[in-house]
Length: 222
Image 1: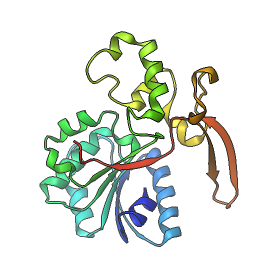
Image 2: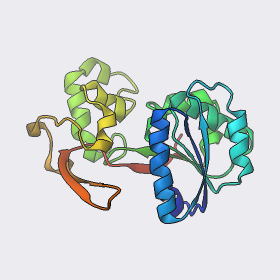
Image 3: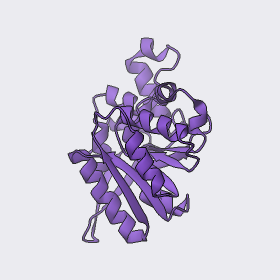
Image 4: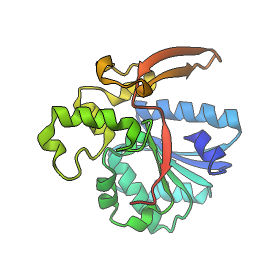
């Protein structure tokens, strides 16, 4: 996310909101490492996952005048932060981490104003947009397992939820430990190499079937 903000959004000073728990700390450690590596200024606000009023951290972030805001919190704080940013007249890019929402429609509903998403980007861990041709095999598998649900409007609403419905932990994606579906059901186009770059500069290559690989997309369609 830091690299995307710097390279694609041309951010030199980046606002960063995470949680003050262990998960938030791990994300922050990686973000600080990346920021130092590419030479950008990271302005951090760490908030409690149960915080219900995000006015103070948003005002502090705004006071630093960052070029881009990265939000790496859980879903409920994301809706509060996007809503508050809009109320404060924030017009700079906002990038939401993949863990920030499992249902984009619900996020928009919670924020209550589509205008708040005019300059918002969402990180995804998929090789294609939801419903795209590269993910057709996943949707087809879902329909074969849950035909009644698949027939309802809006189902499946989200690939993360869809993949989880097969018993897979989406958190394993970034670690390269995604459980492999039956190879007979997976087309060759879904097979990819994943390279993990370690802090010491060495790399580990692991082969996995994966409907993942972080992407960030703009959300003008909401």
